[in-house]
Length: 382
Image 1 (cartoon, rainbow, N blue to C red):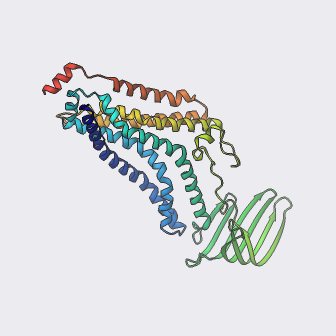
Image 2: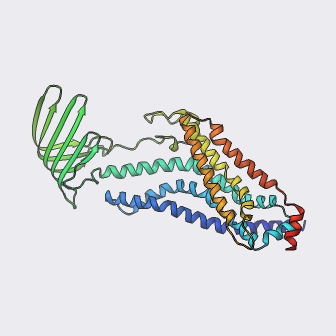
Image 3: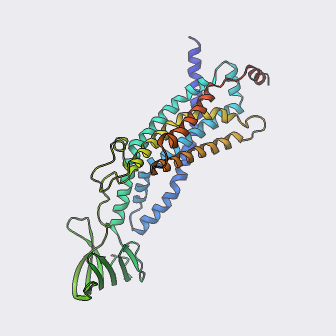
């Protein structure tokens, strides 16, 4: 009865030693991953003349994605650094000399590992699909508010596959265009539309979804390429809907497999999105999410033996370097396996679950490895 409180005290001590490097690694990785995207979002919002808070709003939608990338690495690194520090301070040797096995250390670490695994499952299965769709819809809506933001004076801008627009002057105050030229080609029926106007401004239809360019004081020439016949129209005001999907809503969630929940992946995708995702991609996405989440506990099993490599008087960080290399290698193998499985060129069990089985087997061997008595005696004597 008297040993139980001591074991609880040891468990809490191990957890406290892990939480500090884990939290620091998670914060550093999140900032590192977000910084590059933040710079790109700043460029986009500045070009669209959007308020500054839009940049951080878009970045907030991406945080679940970056958290899913940073969490496994931060957990692995946190446990690795904590175990190495315990070894350098000779605390790990004392713990083993007291008859406390590495298996008990893993049980203590499970108080961190299990919540992290559940969080990873929740992120990848539910939060990330909804957040990714919200981000894409918000970005699409931001561009739709000012579809000609990339237009520069005197430069031809391709606003759709067959449409080119040019303006001699652009007002910074209200965005009015002067000396506007538009060229648009249609294939069915074959037509070539040429428009020249003195001024133009962006407006919207009554439904507030499709931007319209209001052209003033100009001419419209329509060439019928089949009949070699042209028609000309002179106008004072002409509403010209911008082509393509510049002003249309982004659409329903489920445009690709990364926007789908596990249930939707298993049932063949989301209906009424306009297209169907190949079944192989749906299966690969579903199994990849499971493999990535379930790999977290086995990364922790790697941490203890890898932390002991290079530890001691020399202070070499060989174990940390090897751990980083193995972690990156495993992530790359899973990424490559997902690509082959999505293309249908490899079976799911071979591309994804075989590397996971190798990771689990090695972790199981580490957990059941017993330090020889001679080594224990030698370490205690030293």
